[in-house]
Amino acid sequence: MIIFLSLLFAGVGFLINANNAENLLAGYNTLSTEQRKNVDLHGYLRLFKKFHLFLGISVLVIGLGLYFLADESVLILFMTIYPILAYLIFIIIGFRFDQNPSDLKKYAGVLVLVISLILVIYMMMQGMKENELIILEDKISMEGMYGEQIAFKEIDEIKLVDRLPEITKKTNGFAVGAVRKGHFKTEGGEKVKLMLNGDQVPLIYIRKKDATVLYFSSNTADNQKLFQVLENELNSKRADQNN
Image 1 (cartoon, one colour):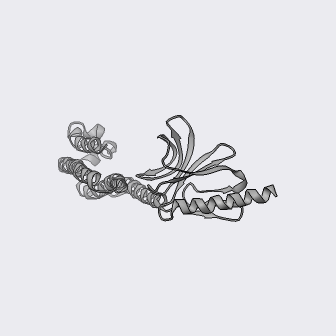
Image 2 (cartoon, helix red, strand yellow):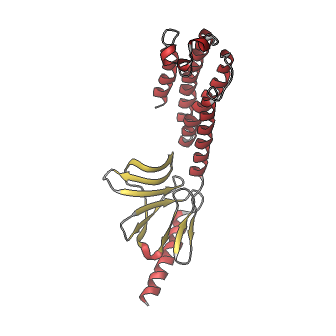
Image 3 (cartoon, rainbow, N blue to C red):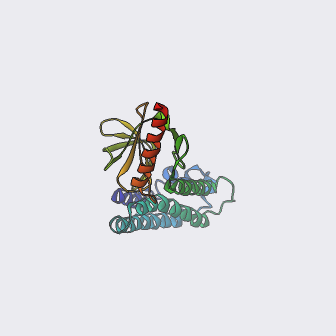
């Protein structure tokens, strides 16, 4: 993916030239003939080519460096945020080649990128935030993104497992490195919910009476201790019900 994106960014720099800019260059292709006279097209295309070559090379070098030297989550954050931020700077610098009067349409690209950057950062922050498993009187509560509350009477089985089944598809969830939250499918087609805040094992396996399966792993608390408290509480509730 790093190599593919690097080649894609660099290739875009050679894709657009003065001969096809009227059709392919976003923003320029919507200008009237008179408005195009106020644009330094050749100067902009030089910047366009240099920017995309720089972006492609920097994504390759930094991306591979993070791939080999850093945590996977750092790499994903870089590959998500860096291109958006780079294009935001590029568009702002590119304004100096356009002498047409400023209007809302001219700054639409900047607005879209700023909103996209804010949303990406917000989603990353929410997704990386620890989901805390809280044991209450009659239920367990998992706070945060894709969190839920499960009543003890809904639980059919809990246990510790050493690993996940093979996960092949994310249907509705968040995944950055070892952090995976939301709804996924296994290799066998089983639908499972993951609340994994890190790579700690063993995992807490919870199967509800409706056959829904959930895997939980904390990043800060001890999974084994959490499971022991949860198991004791569940056994206590079941004993009370039997009496």
